[in-house]
Image 1 (tube, rainbow, N blue to C red):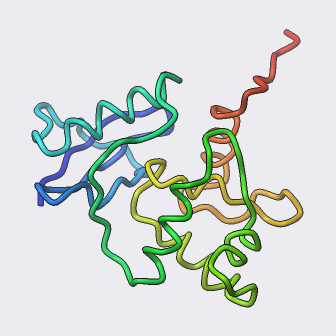
Image 2 (image 1 turned 120 degrees about the vertical axis):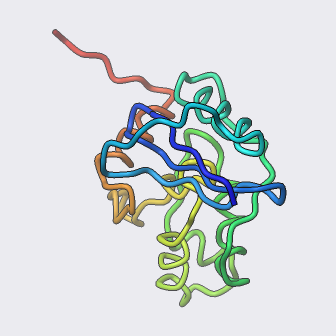
Length: 157
């Protein structure tokens, strides 16, 4: 496994992966040393994240290799299908899984998503439209949803 650290508008981000794909993209809550030379297997991920933050990229095209249970991977695949700028509820995801009672398991799998932004768990909200828990912090979830919104909020001053 190789890793690198890049700087994004939401903080330092660690990318981990190898020839089998990207296994982890994590936002860090501390300042870190930015990687001078990004390993070749991680270059595309770093580049696509940069494009995403610039507003150029709406979909990621990466070879992914996250570790998780079969159920978690099924939930993460559903997350990848949520369109840019859209949100779904945990209940919606439970229905897509085929078990409305699996809402807590779906929420737990969502929370364990190791591929921040690339697998867009930030697009999952409460049934009432509330911003529910987010491993990267609710302030980051809010920022990401506003970044993806087709309706940019304008400042009056």
